[in-house]
Length: 286
Ligand SMILES: N[C@@H]1[C@@H](O)[C@H](O)[C@@H](COP(=O)(O)O)O[C@@H]1O
Image (cartoon, rainbow, N blue to C red; front, side, top):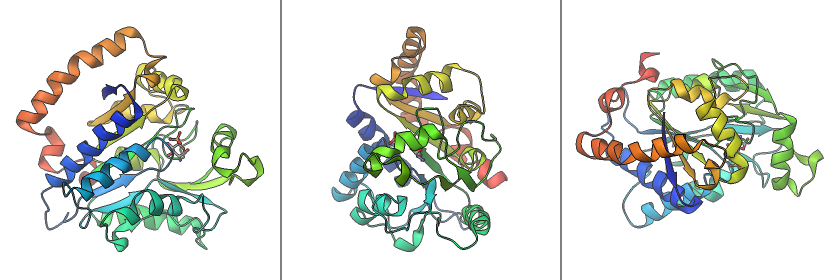
């Protein structure tokens, strides 16, 4: 796992936006994997990333016309046109602002009649397009990834999940601080679904994420901090701001800062390594 530290949230957004655009532009289509497949999160942390991607689209650096997307999660219990549904979030923050083909975007349907089938079909759709090339994610204050709350199996797949009280409290800010209005359940990709992406990039910003960041990086792999599973991913990158490093050891921060420059030089010279370079990965092996 690599950690890249930037001064501010905006710089984190710019770094990740540029990074994703580079990956899209260097993607080489194959008959069994014709499109770049991008996994996407919601939440406030990825907003600067979306802003940067929109800028890059507008200035002609990148196009999303042939990009296929899969979102991480969606609430159960609110309609998709609700102002706080993840369908609405994605449309407003990203999809309506770029040239993405609507039929190439996938978001779990929290209103589906058969929620179990919806989850199974979602996993099958990911396989059908050749797996996810890059999964962008955020992190909850308790260290969760997508809606894989503490205690979730690290081998979990897309499923129905009851939200932890801490997550409901956190997300209350989006529902006029009305606790009763926050949905209690969601559909979410599993930890294993994220782990099977060829590459995972996590955006971690703000002091309120600093404990989660130290637990996921400096602690052991642990189902109580589901993002810690990324320690075992062959190509995971965490990009955080200075505020989010407050709980990290000075030694950890120094180490990752010292290796960043060399890693960037290696990648600039040789391109991404191993499985990424070959366009192969866990997803295609599965
Ligand atoms: N399901 C989402 C996560 O995917 C997101 O990472 C988290 C943090 O959101 P924020 O970035 O707003 O702190 O919120 C929710 O739990």
